[in-house]
Image (cartoon, rainbow, N blue to C red; front, side, top):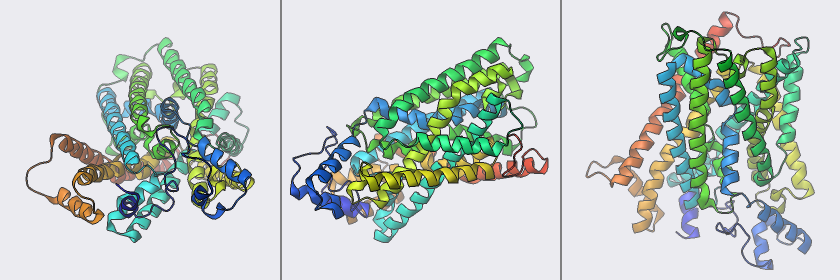
Amino acid sequence: MSSAEKASAGGSATSIDHAHDHDHEGGRVAGPLTQAKRGDLGDDAYVSDEAYERAVQGKEAMHQLGWVKMATLLCVEAIALGSLSLPGAFATLGMVGGVLLTVGTGVLATYTGWICGQVYLFYPGLKSFPDAGRQLFSPLGPRWARFGYELVSVLFVAQLTLNYASHALTGSIMWQHITDRDDICSIIWVLVSAVMLTLLASPPTFEKFSFLGYVDFVSIIIAILIVMIATGVSGPTPASDWSAWPQPGTTFVQGFAAVTNVLFAYAFVIVQFSLQTEMKNPKDVTKSVIVVGGVQILVYTLTGALIYAFVGQSVESPAILSAGSKTIVRVAFGIAMPVIFISGSINANAVARYVHHRIYSHSRHQYINTGPGWLLWIAILAVLGVVAFVVAEAIPFFSDLLGIISSLLISAFTLWLPSVRGLRFTLMLEAKLTFSSPLVRVQVLWYFMLRQGAPLSRQNLIHTLLCLVCFIYGVTVLGVGTYANVDSIVQKYTVGKVRSAFSCAPL
Protein backbone atom coordinates (compact mmCIF):
# COMPACT_ATOMS: atom_id res chain seq x y z
CA MET A 1 0.00 0.00 0.00
CA SER A 2 1.39 3.38 -0.97
CA SER A 3 1.76 6.33 1.36
CA ALA A 4 -1.05 8.10 -0.46
CA GLU A 5 -3.37 5.15 0.06
CA LYS A 6 -2.53 4.96 3.74
CA ALA A 7 -3.31 8.62 4.08
CA SER A 8 -6.66 8.11 2.39
CA ALA A 9 -7.53 4.98 4.36
CA GLY A 10 -6.38 6.51 7.61
CA GLY A 11 -8.14 9.83 7.30
CA SER A 12 -4.93 11.74 7.92
CA ALA A 13 -1.26 10.88 7.71
CA THR A 14 -0.05 14.40 8.39
CA SER A 15 1.32 13.73 11.84
CA ILE A 16 2.12 10.07 11.38
CA ASP A 17 5.85 9.59 11.74
CA HIS A 18 6.76 12.37 9.31
CA ALA A 19 6.99 10.45 6.02
CA HIS A 20 8.05 7.24 7.79
CA ASP A 21 11.77 7.97 7.65
CA HIS A 22 12.19 5.59 10.57
CA ASP A 23 13.45 2.15 9.57
CA HIS A 24 11.31 -0.23 11.65
CA GLU A 25 13.70 -3.13 11.18
CA GLY A 26 16.78 -1.44 12.49
CA GLY A 27 15.34 1.34 14.58
CA ARG A 28 17.64 3.96 13.01
CA VAL A 29 17.01 7.07 10.94
CA ALA A 30 17.62 6.13 7.31
CA GLY A 31 20.08 8.09 5.22
CA PRO A 32 22.45 11.01 5.82
CA LEU A 33 21.49 14.28 7.45
CA THR A 34 20.60 16.10 4.26
CA GLN A 35 18.83 19.43 3.87
CA ALA A 36 15.99 17.61 2.07
CA LYS A 37 15.16 15.66 5.19
CA ARG A 38 14.82 18.82 7.26
CA GLY A 39 11.32 19.25 5.91
CA ASP A 40 10.31 16.32 8.10
CA LEU A 41 10.66 18.66 11.06
CA GLY A 42 7.98 21.01 9.73
CA ASP A 43 8.42 24.44 11.29
CA ASP A 44 12.07 23.61 12.09
CA ALA A 45 13.16 23.09 8.49
CA TYR A 46 15.84 25.79 8.68
CA VAL A 47 17.34 25.23 12.10
CA SER A 48 21.09 25.14 12.54
CA ASP A 49 23.09 22.00 11.87
CA GLU A 50 23.65 21.56 15.61
CA ALA A 51 19.93 21.81 16.39
CA TYR A 52 19.07 19.47 13.56
CA GLU A 53 21.66 16.95 14.73
CA ARG A 54 20.11 17.06 18.20
CA ALA A 55 16.66 16.46 16.69
CA VAL A 56 17.89 13.41 14.78
CA GLN A 57 19.59 12.05 17.90
CA GLY A 58 16.36 12.60 19.81
CA LYS A 59 14.42 10.67 17.22
CA GLU A 60 16.92 7.82 17.33
CA ALA A 61 16.64 7.73 21.13
CA MET A 62 12.89 7.18 20.80
CA HIS A 63 13.34 3.98 18.77
CA GLN A 64 15.56 1.87 21.05
CA LEU A 65 13.04 -0.34 22.86
CA GLY A 66 13.60 -4.10 22.60
CA TRP A 67 10.84 -6.70 22.90
CA VAL A 68 11.93 -7.87 26.38
CA LYS A 69 11.76 -4.33 27.75
CA MET A 70 8.48 -3.89 25.91
CA ALA A 71 7.05 -6.94 27.69
CA THR A 72 8.37 -5.67 31.01
CA LEU A 73 6.71 -2.28 30.55
CA LEU A 74 3.42 -3.92 29.59
CA CYS A 75 3.66 -5.93 32.82
CA VAL A 76 4.36 -2.69 34.68
CA GLU A 77 1.16 -1.19 33.26
CA ALA A 78 -0.98 -4.17 34.23
CA ILE A 79 0.44 -6.19 37.15
CA ALA A 80 -0.15 -3.82 40.03
CA LEU A 81 -3.48 -2.73 41.44
CA GLY A 82 -5.27 -5.50 39.57
CA SER A 83 -3.38 -8.30 41.29
CA LEU A 84 -4.09 -6.79 44.70
CA SER A 85 -7.86 -6.87 44.14
CA LEU A 86 -8.16 -10.36 42.63
CA PRO A 87 -8.46 -12.39 45.87
CA GLY A 88 -11.46 -10.24 46.77
CA ALA A 89 -12.96 -10.97 43.35
CA PHE A 90 -12.43 -14.71 43.91
CA ALA A 91 -14.23 -14.44 47.25
CA THR A 92 -17.25 -13.00 45.45
CA LEU A 93 -17.24 -15.27 42.39
CA GLY A 94 -16.08 -18.48 44.06
CA MET A 95 -12.97 -20.46 43.20
CA VAL A 96 -14.30 -21.96 39.96
CA GLY A 97 -15.78 -18.73 38.67
CA GLY A 98 -12.67 -16.78 39.66
CA VAL A 99 -10.26 -19.12 37.89
CA LEU A 100 -12.36 -19.42 34.72
CA LEU A 101 -12.91 -15.67 34.49
CA THR A 102 -9.25 -14.85 35.17
CA VAL A 103 -7.93 -17.27 32.56
CA GLY A 104 -10.62 -16.47 29.99
CA THR A 105 -10.21 -12.71 30.29
CA GLY A 106 -6.45 -13.13 30.06
CA VAL A 107 -6.72 -15.08 26.81
CA LEU A 108 -9.04 -12.46 25.29
CA ALA A 109 -6.83 -9.57 26.43
CA THR A 110 -3.77 -11.27 24.93
CA TYR A 111 -5.66 -11.75 21.67
CA THR A 112 -6.72 -8.10 21.48
CA GLY A 113 -3.13 -7.14 22.25
CA TRP A 114 -2.03 -9.20 19.26
CA ILE A 115 -4.65 -7.43 17.12
CA CYS A 116 -3.29 -4.03 18.13
CA GLY A 117 0.23 -5.14 17.32
CA GLN A 118 -0.77 -6.29 13.84
CA VAL A 119 -2.72 -3.10 13.17
CA TYR A 120 0.39 -1.07 14.05
CA LEU A 121 2.45 -3.07 11.56
CA PHE A 122 -0.17 -2.38 8.90
CA TYR A 123 -0.15 1.34 9.79
CA PRO A 124 3.39 1.81 11.20
CA GLY A 125 2.90 5.52 11.88
CA LEU A 126 0.40 5.09 14.72
CA LYS A 127 1.71 6.95 17.75
CA SER A 128 -1.03 6.09 20.26
CA PHE A 129 -4.56 4.75 20.62
CA PRO A 130 -6.14 8.02 19.37
CA ASP A 131 -4.37 7.53 16.03
CA ALA A 132 -5.95 4.08 15.85
CA GLY A 133 -9.32 5.69 16.53
CA ARG A 134 -8.81 7.92 13.52
CA GLN A 135 -7.97 4.92 11.35
CA LEU A 136 -11.07 3.10 12.58
CA PHE A 137 -13.45 5.92 11.60
CA SER A 138 -11.62 7.01 8.44
CA PRO A 139 -13.76 5.06 5.90
CA LEU A 140 -16.65 7.38 6.79
CA GLY A 141 -14.71 10.45 5.68
CA PRO A 142 -12.27 13.05 7.06
CA ARG A 143 -14.75 14.56 9.53
CA TRP A 144 -15.55 11.18 11.01
CA ALA A 145 -11.84 10.38 11.13
CA ARG A 146 -11.29 13.54 13.17
CA PHE A 147 -14.26 12.63 15.37
CA GLY A 148 -12.80 9.17 16.00
CA TYR A 149 -9.44 10.69 16.88
CA GLU A 150 -10.89 13.21 19.34
CA LEU A 151 -13.29 10.69 20.92
CA VAL A 152 -10.61 8.10 21.55
CA SER A 153 -8.27 10.87 22.74
CA VAL A 154 -10.73 11.80 25.48
CA LEU A 155 -11.16 8.16 26.52
CA PHE A 156 -7.41 7.55 26.37
CA VAL A 157 -6.50 10.51 28.56
CA ALA A 158 -9.39 9.84 30.95
CA GLN A 159 -8.52 6.19 31.58
CA LEU A 160 -4.81 6.71 32.11
CA THR A 161 -5.43 9.72 34.34
CA LEU A 162 -7.90 7.75 36.47
CA ASN A 163 -5.40 4.88 36.66
CA TYR A 164 -2.81 7.41 37.78
CA ALA A 165 -5.16 8.75 40.45
CA SER A 166 -5.96 5.28 41.76
CA HIS A 167 -2.25 4.72 42.38
CA ALA A 168 -2.12 7.95 44.38
CA LEU A 169 -4.97 6.58 46.49
CA THR A 170 -3.19 3.27 47.00
CA GLY A 171 -0.04 5.17 47.93
CA SER A 172 -1.98 6.94 50.67
CA ILE A 173 -3.20 3.59 52.03
CA MET A 174 0.39 2.32 51.95
CA TRP A 175 1.80 5.30 53.88
CA GLN A 176 -0.87 5.00 56.57
CA HIS A 177 -0.05 1.34 57.20
CA ILE A 178 3.72 1.76 57.04
CA THR A 179 3.80 4.73 59.43
CA ASP A 180 0.85 3.59 61.57
CA ARG A 181 0.04 7.27 62.10
CA ASP A 182 -3.70 7.81 62.03
CA ASP A 183 -3.19 11.31 63.39
CA ILE A 184 -1.70 12.49 60.08
CA CYS A 185 -4.32 13.78 57.63
CA SER A 186 -4.77 11.32 54.77
CA ILE A 187 -4.86 14.22 52.31
CA ILE A 188 -1.16 14.74 53.02
CA TRP A 189 -0.39 11.13 52.11
CA VAL A 190 -2.31 11.43 48.84
CA LEU A 191 -0.37 14.61 48.04
CA VAL A 192 2.97 12.94 48.81
CA SER A 193 2.00 10.00 46.60
CA ALA A 194 0.99 12.27 43.72
CA VAL A 195 4.33 14.09 43.90
CA MET A 196 6.28 10.81 43.85
CA LEU A 197 4.26 9.54 40.91
CA THR A 198 4.96 12.73 38.99
CA LEU A 199 8.71 12.55 39.62
CA LEU A 200 8.93 8.92 38.54
CA ALA A 201 7.05 9.70 35.32
CA SER A 202 9.73 12.14 34.16
CA PRO A 203 11.97 9.89 31.95
CA PRO A 204 11.36 11.16 28.38
CA THR A 205 11.55 7.79 26.61
CA PHE A 206 10.18 4.36 27.45
CA GLU A 207 13.63 2.87 26.94
CA LYS A 208 14.94 5.05 29.78
CA PHE A 209 11.84 4.23 31.80
CA SER A 210 12.35 0.49 31.32
CA PHE A 211 14.98 0.11 34.05
CA LEU A 212 12.26 1.08 36.52
CA GLY A 213 10.14 -1.68 35.02
CA TYR A 214 12.47 -4.40 36.25
CA VAL A 215 12.36 -2.98 39.77
CA ASP A 216 8.58 -2.79 39.54
CA PHE A 217 8.15 -6.39 38.41
CA VAL A 218 10.43 -7.82 41.08
CA SER A 219 8.66 -5.69 43.67
CA ILE A 220 5.15 -6.97 42.97
CA ILE A 221 6.24 -10.60 42.72
CA ILE A 222 8.02 -10.44 46.09
CA ALA A 223 5.07 -8.61 47.67
CA ILE A 224 2.64 -11.25 46.39
CA LEU A 225 4.88 -14.04 47.69
CA ILE A 226 5.06 -12.37 51.11
CA VAL A 227 1.26 -12.21 51.30
CA MET A 228 0.92 -15.82 50.12
CA ILE A 229 3.47 -17.12 52.61
CA ALA A 230 2.11 -15.04 55.48
CA THR A 231 -1.47 -16.16 54.92
CA GLY A 232 -0.39 -19.75 54.36
CA VAL A 233 1.78 -19.95 57.48
CA SER A 234 -0.95 -18.47 59.64
CA GLY A 235 -3.08 -21.38 58.52
CA PRO A 236 -6.03 -21.53 56.17
CA THR A 237 -9.46 -20.75 57.51
CA PRO A 238 -11.94 -23.62 57.97
CA ALA A 239 -12.81 -25.38 54.72
CA SER A 240 -16.36 -24.08 54.88
CA ASP A 241 -15.11 -20.49 54.71
CA TRP A 242 -14.08 -20.64 51.05
CA SER A 243 -16.18 -22.12 48.32
CA ALA A 244 -15.91 -23.30 44.75
CA TRP A 245 -19.07 -21.32 44.01
CA PRO A 246 -20.39 -17.88 44.96
CA GLN A 247 -21.58 -17.65 48.54
CA PRO A 248 -25.36 -17.73 49.14
CA GLY A 249 -26.72 -14.22 49.16
CA THR A 250 -24.20 -12.86 46.66
CA THR A 251 -26.02 -10.21 44.65
CA PHE A 252 -25.77 -9.54 40.94
CA VAL A 253 -24.23 -6.16 41.67
CA GLN A 254 -21.51 -7.72 43.83
CA GLY A 255 -20.78 -10.37 41.21
CA PHE A 256 -20.41 -7.99 38.31
CA ALA A 257 -18.33 -5.57 40.35
CA ALA A 258 -15.91 -8.49 40.84
CA VAL A 259 -15.91 -9.12 37.08
CA THR A 260 -14.79 -5.55 36.42
CA ASN A 261 -11.94 -5.92 38.93
CA VAL A 262 -10.68 -8.96 37.02
CA LEU A 263 -10.87 -7.04 33.75
CA PHE A 264 -8.94 -4.14 35.29
CA ALA A 265 -6.02 -6.50 35.90
CA TYR A 266 -5.51 -6.92 32.14
CA ALA A 267 -5.45 -3.24 31.18
CA PHE A 268 -2.15 -3.23 29.27
CA VAL A 269 -3.43 -2.78 25.72
CA ILE A 270 -4.09 0.94 26.13
CA VAL A 271 -0.36 1.80 26.20
CA GLN A 272 0.68 -0.77 23.60
CA PHE A 273 0.69 1.60 20.61
CA SER A 274 2.64 4.18 22.62
CA LEU A 275 5.27 1.56 23.45
CA GLN A 276 5.40 -0.14 20.06
CA THR A 277 6.23 3.11 18.28
CA GLU A 278 9.53 3.15 20.22
CA MET A 279 10.52 -0.44 19.43
CA LYS A 280 13.68 -1.15 17.45
CA ASN A 281 11.80 -3.89 15.61
CA PRO A 282 8.02 -3.47 15.99
CA LYS A 283 7.46 -6.93 14.47
CA ASP A 284 8.67 -8.39 17.77
CA VAL A 285 5.54 -7.10 19.50
CA THR A 286 3.93 -10.55 19.24
CA LYS A 287 6.65 -11.95 21.51
CA SER A 288 6.03 -9.20 24.04
CA VAL A 289 2.26 -9.68 24.05
CA ILE A 290 2.46 -13.46 24.43
CA VAL A 291 4.94 -13.16 27.29
CA VAL A 292 2.96 -10.54 29.18
CA GLY A 293 -0.29 -12.44 28.61
CA GLY A 294 1.16 -15.69 29.90
CA VAL A 295 2.80 -14.06 32.92
CA GLN A 296 -0.39 -12.23 33.83
CA ILE A 297 -2.60 -15.31 33.62
CA LEU A 298 -0.17 -17.30 35.77
CA VAL A 299 0.39 -14.60 38.40
CA TYR A 300 -3.26 -13.58 38.65
CA THR A 301 -4.64 -17.11 38.86
CA LEU A 302 -2.18 -18.16 41.56
CA THR A 303 -2.59 -14.91 43.50
CA GLY A 304 -6.37 -14.99 43.48
CA ALA A 305 -6.76 -18.71 44.14
CA LEU A 306 -4.10 -19.22 46.81
CA ILE A 307 -4.77 -16.12 48.89
CA TYR A 308 -8.52 -16.75 48.73
CA ALA A 309 -7.96 -20.36 49.80
CA PHE A 310 -5.75 -19.27 52.70
CA VAL A 311 -7.83 -16.32 53.94
CA GLY A 312 -11.35 -17.18 52.81
CA GLN A 313 -14.29 -14.81 52.68
CA SER A 314 -12.61 -12.30 54.97
CA VAL A 315 -9.95 -11.42 52.37
CA GLU A 316 -9.54 -7.68 51.96
CA SER A 317 -8.83 -5.44 48.99
CA PRO A 318 -6.00 -4.76 48.38
CA ALA A 319 -4.91 -8.24 49.42
CA ILE A 320 -1.87 -6.94 51.30
CA LEU A 321 -4.23 -5.95 54.11
CA SER A 322 -4.89 -9.66 54.67
CA ALA A 323 -1.22 -10.47 55.27
CA GLY A 324 -1.68 -10.87 59.03
CA SER A 325 0.10 -8.85 61.70
CA LYS A 326 0.81 -5.15 61.34
CA THR A 327 4.50 -5.91 60.95
CA ILE A 328 3.93 -8.20 57.97
CA VAL A 329 1.55 -5.70 56.40
CA ARG A 330 4.19 -2.99 56.78
CA VAL A 331 6.86 -5.18 55.20
CA ALA A 332 4.57 -6.15 52.32
CA PHE A 333 3.62 -2.54 51.65
CA GLY A 334 7.26 -1.51 51.83
CA ILE A 335 8.21 -4.13 49.25
CA ALA A 336 5.24 -3.10 47.11
CA MET A 337 6.17 0.58 47.21
CA PRO A 338 8.00 0.52 43.83
CA VAL A 339 5.11 -1.16 42.05
CA ILE A 340 2.58 1.27 43.49
CA PHE A 341 4.49 4.29 42.20
CA ILE A 342 6.24 2.94 39.10
CA SER A 343 3.14 1.25 37.69
CA GLY A 344 1.21 4.42 38.33
CA SER A 345 3.79 6.70 36.77
CA ILE A 346 3.81 4.87 33.42
CA ASN A 347 0.20 6.01 32.98
CA ALA A 348 1.23 9.64 33.40
CA ASN A 349 4.20 9.10 31.09
CA ALA A 350 1.95 7.77 28.31
CA VAL A 351 -0.56 10.63 28.66
CA ALA A 352 2.18 13.26 28.79
CA ARG A 353 3.82 11.76 25.70
CA TYR A 354 0.54 11.93 23.78
CA VAL A 355 -0.18 15.54 24.76
CA HIS A 356 3.43 16.60 24.16
CA HIS A 357 3.53 15.04 20.69
CA ARG A 358 0.18 16.56 19.80
CA ILE A 359 1.50 20.04 20.59
CA TYR A 360 4.98 19.59 19.10
CA SER A 361 4.20 17.05 16.36
CA HIS A 362 5.98 19.09 13.65
CA SER A 363 8.85 20.38 15.73
CA ARG A 364 12.23 19.16 16.89
CA HIS A 365 11.00 19.86 20.43
CA GLN A 366 8.84 16.71 20.25
CA TYR A 367 11.90 14.62 21.17
CA ILE A 368 12.14 16.22 24.63
CA ASN A 369 15.83 17.09 24.37
CA THR A 370 15.51 20.87 24.00
CA GLY A 371 14.62 23.61 26.48
CA PRO A 372 11.06 24.18 25.20
CA GLY A 373 10.53 20.44 24.89
CA TRP A 374 11.56 19.79 28.49
CA LEU A 375 9.58 22.77 29.77
CA LEU A 376 6.35 21.53 28.20
CA TRP A 377 7.05 17.97 29.36
CA ILE A 378 7.46 19.05 32.99
CA ALA A 379 4.39 21.30 32.80
CA ILE A 380 2.20 18.47 31.51
CA LEU A 381 3.39 16.11 34.25
CA ALA A 382 2.75 18.78 36.89
CA VAL A 383 -0.83 19.26 35.69
CA LEU A 384 -1.41 15.51 35.67
CA GLY A 385 -0.10 15.30 39.23
CA VAL A 386 -2.59 17.93 40.39
CA VAL A 387 -5.45 16.15 38.61
CA ALA A 388 -4.44 12.80 40.15
CA PHE A 389 -4.46 14.35 43.62
CA VAL A 390 -7.92 15.87 43.15
CA VAL A 391 -9.45 12.70 41.69
CA ALA A 392 -7.94 10.49 44.40
CA GLU A 393 -9.48 12.67 47.08
CA ALA A 394 -12.82 13.06 45.31
CA ILE A 395 -13.25 9.27 44.92
CA PRO A 396 -11.69 7.88 48.13
CA PHE A 397 -12.46 4.17 47.79
CA PHE A 398 -10.44 1.39 46.24
CA SER A 399 -12.36 -1.52 44.65
CA ASP A 400 -15.25 0.57 43.38
CA LEU A 401 -12.86 3.03 41.76
CA LEU A 402 -11.22 0.14 39.91
CA GLY A 403 -14.64 -1.13 38.91
CA ILE A 404 -15.77 2.20 37.48
CA ILE A 405 -12.57 2.55 35.45
CA SER A 406 -12.96 -1.00 34.13
CA SER A 407 -16.60 -0.57 33.18
CA LEU A 408 -16.39 2.80 31.48
CA LEU A 409 -12.98 2.75 29.85
CA ILE A 410 -10.99 -0.48 30.13
CA SER A 411 -13.86 -2.42 28.56
CA ALA A 412 -13.36 -0.21 25.50
CA PHE A 413 -9.58 -0.30 25.18
CA THR A 414 -9.09 -3.94 26.17
CA LEU A 415 -12.12 -5.57 24.55
CA TRP A 416 -14.62 -3.94 22.24
CA LEU A 417 -12.48 -1.30 20.47
CA PRO A 418 -9.75 -3.80 19.46
CA SER A 419 -12.42 -6.34 18.44
CA VAL A 420 -14.12 -3.84 16.11
CA ARG A 421 -10.75 -2.82 14.71
CA GLY A 422 -9.85 -6.50 14.37
CA LEU A 423 -12.87 -7.13 12.16
CA ARG A 424 -11.87 -4.23 9.96
CA PHE A 425 -8.19 -5.24 9.99
CA THR A 426 -8.96 -8.79 8.82
CA LEU A 427 -10.98 -7.39 5.96
CA MET A 428 -8.39 -4.76 5.02
CA LEU A 429 -5.76 -7.48 4.65
CA GLU A 430 -8.04 -9.38 2.29
CA ALA A 431 -8.84 -6.23 0.33
CA LYS A 432 -5.17 -5.35 0.03
CA LEU A 433 -4.55 -8.53 -1.95
CA THR A 434 -7.14 -7.68 -4.61
CA PHE A 435 -8.09 -4.02 -4.60
CA SER A 436 -6.13 -0.80 -4.60
CA SER A 437 -8.90 1.77 -4.17
CA PRO A 438 -9.73 2.77 -0.56
CA LEU A 439 -13.34 3.31 -1.68
CA VAL A 440 -13.57 -0.30 -2.83
CA ARG A 441 -12.14 -1.43 0.50
CA VAL A 442 -14.90 0.43 2.32
CA GLN A 443 -17.51 -1.28 0.15
CA VAL A 444 -15.90 -4.64 0.87
CA LEU A 445 -16.10 -3.82 4.60
CA TRP A 446 -19.85 -3.36 4.28
CA TYR A 447 -20.11 -6.60 2.31
CA PHE A 448 -18.06 -8.49 4.87
CA MET A 449 -20.28 -7.47 7.78
CA LEU A 450 -23.65 -8.03 6.06
CA ARG A 451 -23.11 -10.89 3.59
CA GLN A 452 -25.19 -14.04 3.99
CA GLY A 453 -23.43 -16.26 1.47
CA ALA A 454 -20.62 -18.73 2.00
CA PRO A 455 -18.60 -18.23 5.23
CA LEU A 456 -15.08 -16.84 5.21
CA SER A 457 -11.99 -18.97 5.42
CA ARG A 458 -11.49 -20.91 8.61
CA GLN A 459 -8.77 -18.55 9.79
CA ASN A 460 -10.91 -15.47 9.28
CA LEU A 461 -13.94 -17.15 10.79
CA ILE A 462 -12.02 -17.91 13.98
CA HIS A 463 -10.87 -14.30 14.23
CA THR A 464 -14.40 -13.07 13.59
CA LEU A 465 -15.82 -15.25 16.37
CA LEU A 466 -13.14 -14.18 18.83
CA CYS A 467 -13.71 -10.53 18.01
CA LEU A 468 -17.46 -10.95 18.51
CA VAL A 469 -16.85 -12.56 21.91
CA CYS A 470 -14.60 -9.65 22.90
CA PHE A 471 -17.15 -7.14 21.64
CA ILE A 472 -20.07 -8.71 23.53
CA TYR A 473 -17.99 -9.08 26.71
CA GLY A 474 -16.78 -5.49 26.50
CA VAL A 475 -20.17 -3.91 25.79
CA THR A 476 -21.76 -5.97 28.59
CA VAL A 477 -19.17 -4.76 31.06
CA LEU A 478 -19.63 -1.21 29.80
CA GLY A 479 -23.35 -1.21 30.54
CA VAL A 480 -23.97 -3.69 33.34
CA GLY A 481 -20.62 -3.19 35.04
CA THR A 482 -21.06 0.55 35.27
CA TYR A 483 -24.51 0.10 36.80
CA ALA A 484 -23.24 -2.49 39.27
CA ASN A 485 -20.39 -0.34 40.51
CA VAL A 486 -22.46 2.82 40.78
CA ASP A 487 -25.09 0.90 42.74
CA SER A 488 -22.37 -0.51 45.00
CA ILE A 489 -21.10 2.99 45.74
CA VAL A 490 -24.62 4.22 46.55
CA GLN A 491 -25.15 1.32 48.95
CA LYS A 492 -21.85 1.95 50.73
CA TYR A 493 -22.64 5.62 51.16
CA THR A 494 -26.09 4.70 52.48
CA VAL A 495 -24.68 2.51 55.25
CA GLY A 496 -21.81 4.89 55.96
CA LYS A 497 -18.95 2.68 54.75
CA VAL A 498 -17.33 5.43 52.68
CA ARG A 499 -15.81 8.59 54.09
CA SER A 500 -16.57 11.95 52.57
CA ALA A 501 -14.42 13.48 49.84
CA PHE A 502 -11.37 15.52 50.89
CA SER A 503 -11.52 14.14 54.41
CA CYS A 504 -8.59 13.70 56.76
CA ALA A 505 -10.06 10.43 58.03
CA PRO A 506 -7.93 7.30 57.42
CA LEU A 507 -8.68 5.45 54.19
